[in-house]
Image 1 (cartoon, rainbow, N blue to C red):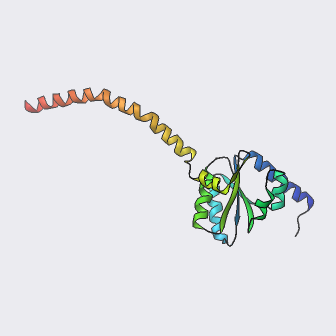
Image 2 (cartoon, rainbow, N blue to C red):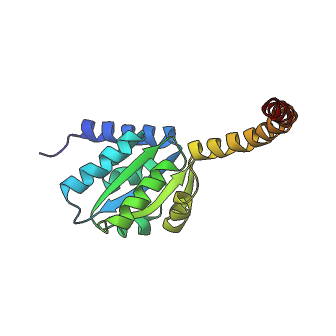
Image 3 (cartoon, one colour):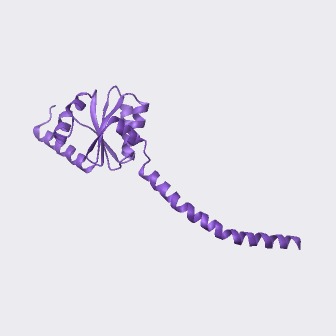
Length: 171
């Protein structure tokens, strides 16, 4: 059954809102991808707070107005879908890994905070460390000098205890 004009306007409004609220929006298409594989992808994205939605090309054209190249949309094979994420890297990582394992999924480009990225740039983005990994590295970098300082300070105490234990064993 065809959608009414009101339903189309609601879909356009929803896509516009999601495009403006998300830091990263990745355009993908899938062709000859089984339902189980697509559901597996959706579940993985959902675990990482990424919303994945199939969108009509005309709705995307209207939502992005002049910010999308007509040739990019026409080059899509299969269904057009968008992955909306508040994290700058995690959606790219998941989609790039899935596209590598499943040839049916293709990444076409993305918008990162309003700037258009090509497929190659999205693939480079997927190679970056995630926010959690960067925070863990930062914490380790901050912690290492402090740990070393504590070990240096405790070395004299350990040395004294070793001398006292050696004297105790000789007596």
